[in-house]
Image (tube, rainbow, N blue to C red):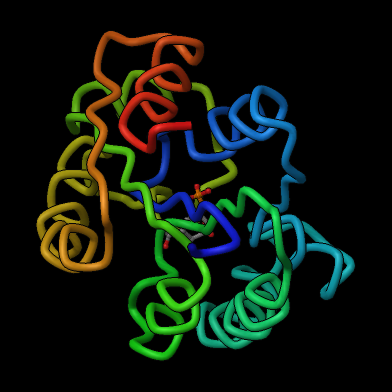
Length: 170
Ligand code: S3P
């Protein structure tokens, strides 16, 4: 039995909200890689990108993944770009049953409409286009890294948590 549940997926698929609700429901602890990176750097993700660049963010993110993967009995939520490192994937899969949360580009666009905390979506081009392009680049990586895929379009948090519990036989 893997000791943790890992949640992965694109920005705006609800990883943090679902992860917290799932952890509450099944009596596990919750941790989030972006929170840990922010604690390490002492500033928000958007400021890390702006002041130190994406490469530095990815370095901190990999350190956070290693640290989080030493936990037991945790629901772990990982930032959407964590799978660009094969080493991160291996750490996560070694200790977690991995759930991929999915949503359509339009849903993500709507969910993040008034959100400016995602530097990779602060592009000069149209935002929906940026979401579609980035998702296309990543979808195979996500699909290959997960044990279970859950579509979140049109579903609320409770409904998603119930589906995860059913699929994991919890
Ligand atoms: C990123 C996703 C973000 C955050 C950073 C980069 C990505 O986390 O780690 O902005 O590359 O997809 P969420 O997936 O929690 O939004």
